[in-house]
Image (cartoon, rainbow, N blue to C red; front, side):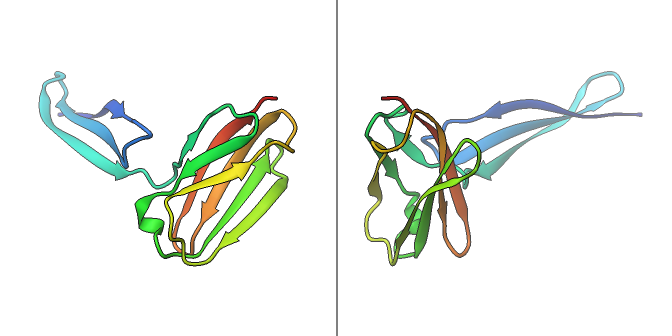
Amino acid sequence: MDGGYAYSGYLYNPQFTIQSVLIVKTDSLGNTIFTSQIEIPNETELLIYPNPTSDILNFNLPIELDGNNVTITVYDALGSEKSLLKYDKLSSKQYQFDCSSLPNGLYSISMQTEEKRYWQKFVVLH
């Protein structure tokens, strides 16, 4: 008789590029038959700081974006576009966005290439 699969854990750190999920297979008595750790590339996160911010938001781009064309968009909490920046052939890993003209609130920043999209939420507090 089969006991099924159990989700056993989730390890996450936004400073790393890998997330891990631990899956456990058991029999009907709860005995472990096997375990498997699945590593999932963290392709949706950006390292941004400080968060919250009052003026300048710094962000580090994932290394694989080097040399790519990137569109960076900032949205407010309602999904309205507040800023659109386009970069051709990125040559740096660190960029800044001036938030001083944005009102207090929750925002998200999105970075889109031809192949991937990265995003992160941030707060503006003056």
